[in-house]
Image (cartoon, rainbow, N blue to C red; front, side, top):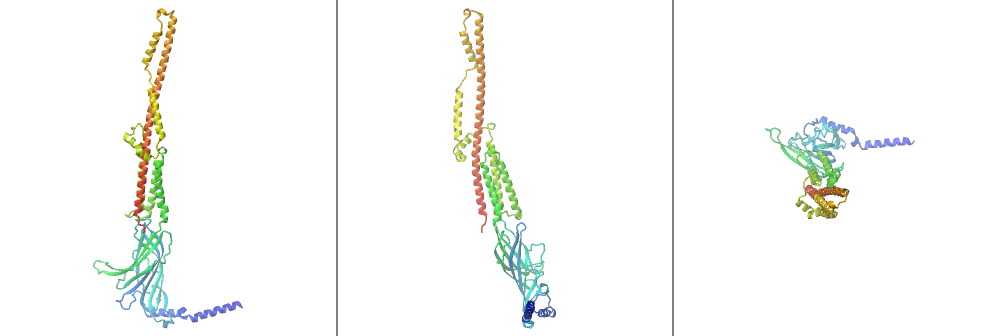
Length: 487
């Protein structure tokens, strides 16, 4: 029983809709209207729809930015999803709604009516596409025809990458008729970007402008200039630089800061040059990444200048490290530290840049001076003088021959004399060894002093280079930042 009641309700509702909305849903009125317009009236879609040929057809074009799909800086192309709308008056598509049961409009394929031949002049696609293909038009009783359809547009866009990645781009899309001159079609453009839907975090639409214009074209040299109307849609974009700051600028800044740490490495570690070369190679990789993102034009972006300037500073720091290592490993085999350089190192300049004064070194120098003064005061008699003295003392102490009781006493005295002479020769040998050791120690201390002087010079020069490098990096950074145009 319930099912029967439900079926009856559906049948009654369907009958009411058919009887009360006959003017809207009746296909008979549509067929009769189309037959009267396109068959009886012999409508020709290849003819501009005006009854007076001198009358110009006004085409109103609307352009809405729906979505920015891609901005290719290297290829200099701009790809968007746009909503296009065109409206014009077709004088052959007019009727009285009362004659067709109140029918005021109908939909028809665009292949059945006349369409303005509008094209995108600066198209960057693989071919020129017909944006009106596979679409329909809405026709009203007063002859107003409205065509609207979404489409994907790829156009050329001249990129100014000077301020990359803090840059602003302006891409212009130019639409206009290809065959109809200004005396046949007048194009008037409107539109907006308020319906813009941001598809990624890289670009933001900050402005939209529409300019309608007119320009004369001469196809052949002997032709009369023909005026054509066009409309320019200018889309202004702002790049959101968060991605590039974290992945390009911040690593470069940190790597260049690592170069500053190389000045704190002791020359004995042998890592100063290795660190500089590693940083230089890292910056080269980042520079190649930036070069792959940007178009190969004569305009060098500021970030590229920053990378190049940083690489120059790193190369200079590498040269500074080589100079410091050369000074550090110098010794007496080259030459002594010049007096004027020693005066600078141990003077005010050394105290400023060395940051620490070696008090222990001064105490060690004083101790070494006292030690050599004590050693120099020790003087030994020459060997001949000592031996002659011993012989004289032996001869004076030796009794005369008459006093000797026998030859045995004489031999005993001579034996004692020979033993003393051997002791004298042994002492002379020991003295010679001490003299050689003293000379070797003096030469070693002299070499160590020379090496320490050069190390002290290298340390002061390294600190001077560190200050120069720091000032150079700060100046480079401030100059680069002043070049950016932050709007």
